[in-house]
Length: 109
Image (cartoon, rainbow, N blue to C red; front, side, top):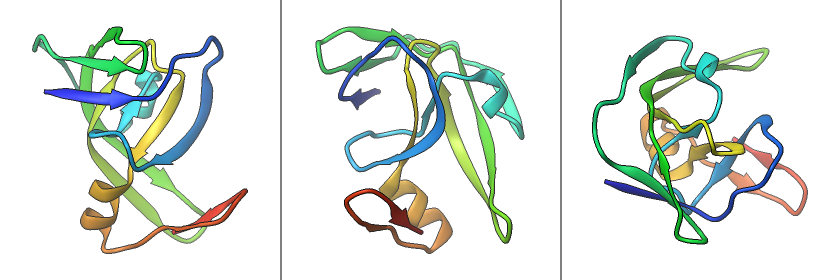
C-alpha cells in the first residue's frame, strides 16, 4: 500500500483537512486515534512529494465531533512525521453519505 501526500513541513497542524489526493486518512497525533488503536506491523510507507517514505506506526479509528454531529474515521494511519491531519474525502463521503462543498477559504460538509 502507498498513500500519497503532497508535502512535509516543520510545524504540526492540529486541525483536520479534507484532501482529495490522499488514499488514506492520516494523522500525526496518536491521541487522534481515540476510538480504537493498534500497532501497525506492515512495511508500507506514506510517500510524500519529494519521494521520501514516511513510516506508519499505528492504525485506528478517530471520532470527529461537531456541536450537532459526530463522524467516525475508520482505518486512520498514524504517521508521526506528517504535519497535517488529512481526511480522505472520497472515503469519508462514501462512509457517511455526505458531500463536501469547497469555497476559496472554507468548506461545508
